[in-house]
Image 1 (cartoon, rainbow, N blue to C red):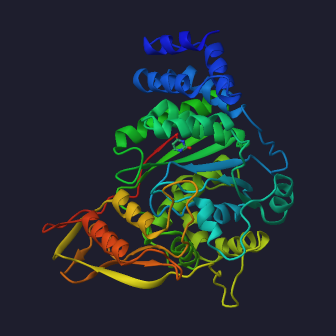
Image 2 (image 1 turned 30 degrees about the horizontal axis):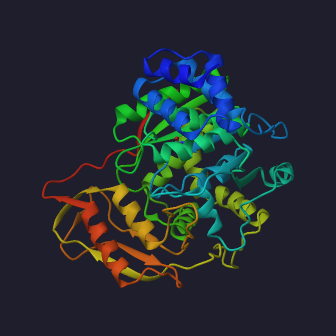
Image 3 (image 1 turned 135 degrees about the vertical axis):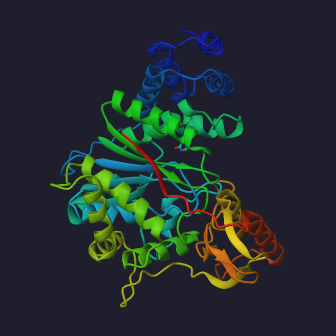
Length: 441
Ligand code: URA
């Protein structure tokens, strides 16, 4: 087989055979196909798309390009969740303990953040002592003890995806439904999931800017999941404004704790409960509860201390520190809160999630390159959200950084400008959008 013929076939809009796709992924994995030919084929896929069969073959080939986890030690059906990314997305640290209250055991492999969307690994790492790089051989012991383990992704999980993703990032080929869908699903399948709940975010802070595109991505991933024998459900959630009241690592984990003691933001409680309910159902641990009744039960357990007990078990099992008053200890405390006040009187009509996400990265909460260090104390707290009425001079939000931050006055000034630019106002009342846009089964 010749890679140039494969590129030409896709360039002329022909469907690739399973053999051609396997040949491509093998060549990506063993590095026998040079970057320029890989990039040419990626661009042809962006332009001409892929059929369901092609996407599924590519996903399974990528999943098989490295180690495939065997989760047979998990009691019941191993169910995983994945979010397509966003700003202020602290759903994983909530749903893991919440699902554990139903006896759902989870093995979660998560990534670090790059760009304006935060990574779950960085969030957990903001807790003092928390060990996020867990050797695989310790997973069964931790799952037996607490029902949960969370760890950073190892380099041998879908290595073909790592090569492709790095090239997509620099060749303008990230934004393609077959490429995003196969990238995400290959890692879930290699991670050992037998059932998957996808949180497909939609809006300014997400890959998919409109509900139509989010639905397209969700449907592609569900088809791949079903063809690959994994029950898959997608929940389309709003990411037009940041989720909840904070973005930034320690701030978000503080919000997780607040949520678990019953003081959560309504959007966070809603999204976490709906995602958890679907995970519990796919894992077959829902008993007699289904639909709204199951979501209500999740909401109850999220805030009444049941999920909090499980959260403590998870933190302590992985070395995290908790104070005698029950609050986790954070590596770096957010300090020197700088307030951003409203320049107008009226209703908040928008808070662009991508713009505040960039502001948060400028403060040090995220990485621009993989090598960057994170300031766990950096981030933004949102006091008012879309639909709220404010008077000129009211505090909209505040931002903070860690004690040893290298964000100087100039950076702080730019951050202030960015944040103000993210807000828009209306003199007319603005309807609050639901946080769950759709659920696709
Ligand atoms: N997340 C992934 O893992 N892959 C993509 O292509 C996009 C988002």
